[in-house]
Image (cartoon, rainbow, N blue to C red; front, side):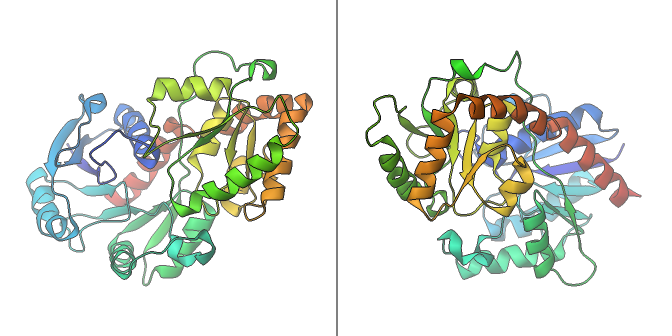
Length: 331
């Protein structure tokens, strides 16, 4: 039986978040439909009890050790394909490789983050050495194409999140916080979000609190995150840059109203459902918060539209797309 190896390089030492969570969901769905054996390469020290039914093989950390060791592991496994969860693959491999480019922030100076030369160099080399690159949005796909030379291909495969169990809460039951999911990198724009919120609450006695959930300060497990998504007044995602926008997709799936940045990747993901704002303008953020908080009809519209929009972006859809791409490379 053919062996497809998945590289879990996105997993760190702590709880699984963000793209790691999306990768786990896709891999679980993939293992249920794949006609071949699946092996997960797990970085030393990472704990993945939720994938205990999938064969796991220890793999090294660090760029140099990975370059030296991964080809030997792949040969030992007789793998016919390596699918990496990130934009990092062996430059020489005994089998075709797939790299995943979640975003390429150094191509977007407005995001407010600096990317070291080594990361730019290593990412570019890895993408160029892969037989195929997967990107979650049209913007990231086009960014990746601009870095590639030769015959390397880039496929568009949006991330997926599981459909929540049970009915979507009514908008009248959404009396919780204005919820922000994500870490505190500069692109997440926390300072201007706080400034916009400060403008929004002036003169308001009924303003919901602003709650930041995510590393490093306020990690919650998946069950608690789902509870917050089902009860929050709205999800606020006024980031400066997004390669995809998983918090927005999670909000849509749970029927949570969304206030988010007017960015190409978020427009592609969410369509006309959210209230869009200018992430560089606190007044625009404040106006977006007010528009959603003050208008029950706007909230009801988003509560109804969100799950339908998210229904096409599930782990099952991701798994089916992966399988099609794998079969093309395995011919």
